[in-house]
Image 1 (tube, rainbow, N blue to C red):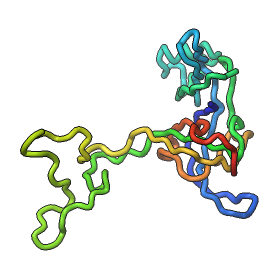
Image 2: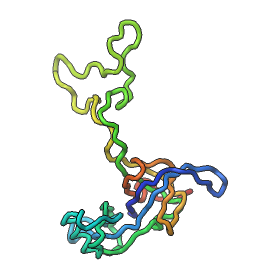
Image 3: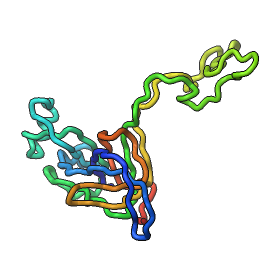
Image 4: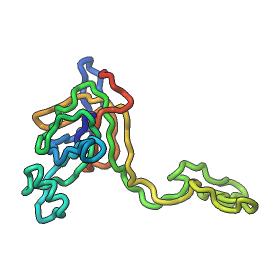
Length: 214
């Protein structure tokens, strides 16, 4: 499974070969340094640790500095590290991956942290319709009954209630790579991806699609 760490730059529009206008999200994909390669013999499974971006060594912890030293970039440790499962990888520690790891027409999955919305009620958080707003309506944006007076006499686990909304990982599957700009390390992906502008995402090969289409 191919993968890369990317930074969301924003959205724009591009035209395809047939003159159709396509909304795309622009991602700065890489360059990513291979921080470590995990193997079945040593770790029980195979995967690749990738590092993206750079920060000052004084701002990095000892575990990160150890990985950076192993990859040969101890003076410029990465800002973000992500792990990608790859049982057939041929990468080695210190290798650099760029945006051209993906090609135009490939399907990918984008994984990121969605925008945080703070504490929200059930109407916004779960799309409840609320109570009657006309004559005799005593509540408009509340959830109503949440439990039982008789058995079991408690609130069922997983009941949709007010609470924190957003700021959780989400995966958008089967997105199409519209354009790849290897010189600038840019990926143009059709549609939207999770997270605000400037957030860090993981982009991997789509796990539910193996064919390549435009």
